[in-house]
Length: 215
Image 1: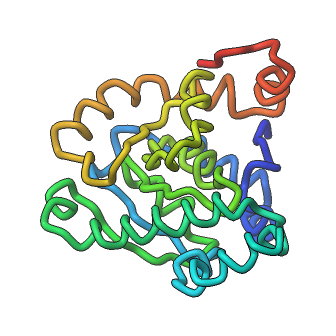
Image 2: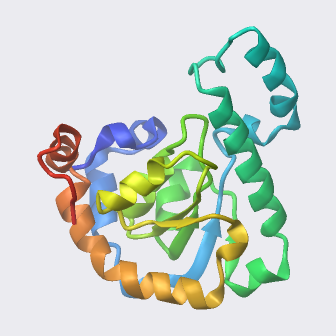
């Protein structure tokens, strides 16, 4: 199946046969999705939520160390922690409940199927800025919502390349009216983007610059 396997968290490929995964992905229908937002982070990289991360950054910066074992940028680690802290605070507000946010915790083997039932996924950045959840969400026709990580504009570049995702400057920017508008604008593009872009050929053409924008 034409899945961009390297963009998925490897756990999916270990726990499930790729052919079974692709069959499940192809069976998903937009009309079956709940008009809700899934919040499900921290299962794999729970350490990014720890306040001890922030306390150790000044030392590592002073001695010129990156974050082990992935040698991540310390600024990326700080942005990832702050984004998750702010998301956790907003997720407990009446405004979050009003937009249909649901905080869930799934076993890895269940995650893709469960996510496919939602229109949106809250997708805070990871230790290397991008996360596998961006691609995983788009594979199951769910729109990822990411908070811009400060001055880092990587996700803006993804928008320019045609990725049907949502960028906000603050989690509080997510409202009932905006989610309705985002879904109306982006949902018609999800099938074609998955078919044309989330493949080995599509990734290669974007990587080499042959395809500056994919839809």
